[in-house]
Length: 293
Ligand code: AMP
Image (cartoon, rainbow, N blue to C red; front, side, top):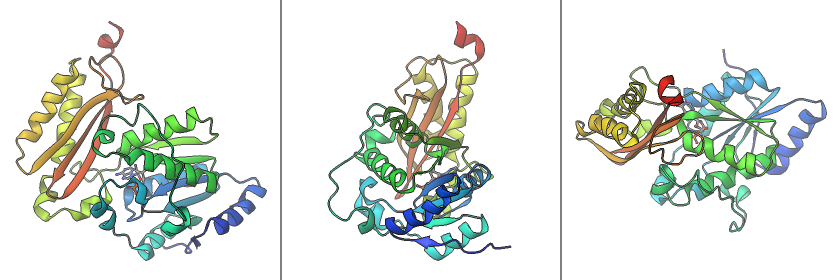
């Protein structure tokens, strides 16, 4: 059964006015920031927020300053009617969907730069991307003032960037990580999956399989990152349709290259299938004996 459509607010003033009433009655606000084209991955974040917070706000905003390629920004198609219906089904209280000029009424001068965690993985290949993400999330935090904000582990580096930002800038907002939602064949749900041709969709799960191979190598006791990367790359090498952008093993918190694996690491990878870029990651730890040695 579909719930009542949540209000869709487009201005900062309206959303602040509406949330002031929630705060006045002591309710907590949970924010789920998205770029729309909602799917069950976003749904998992919303459901988690629903369980924890009194008022769930979903923001839908395709943030121009986080795109390093203009075509990618322009190709980012969302259907607001469909997204709003999905939010209604999941019991969202309010949708904040500002036009670009509402968040960027003039050229942006202030930016949030999170050093270190933004450097490797996607940061190396998408200049300015995490600065754009951190800046828009900071804006959303100031506008919505949530108690908690929900982010997917699917974008593991983004999660680390937002965590570092809130810690380093003493923000009283709990960042809640949510596990990656996958298709039965392992492919992580993503708005970009719908751009894949049927042939590309068929081979796309190779990314997850490569990460699994990397993880298994760590679990088998391999402590050299380059060996883990080699094992994962081997899976992708047998898939001629996939072009590897990067495979890296980084410390799961600092996002710095791990070298020797002694603690919790994230194996992250990005591949291109035709014109579509897919990213995914897995977090794992070496066997206990390795850790203590
Ligand atoms: P996006 O709309 O792609 O910017 O994603 C908005 C939020 O949903 C981010 O915190 C993502 O990490 C999260 N998300 C996207 N896909 C998934 C997924 N398959 N599983 C869990 N979270 C996801």
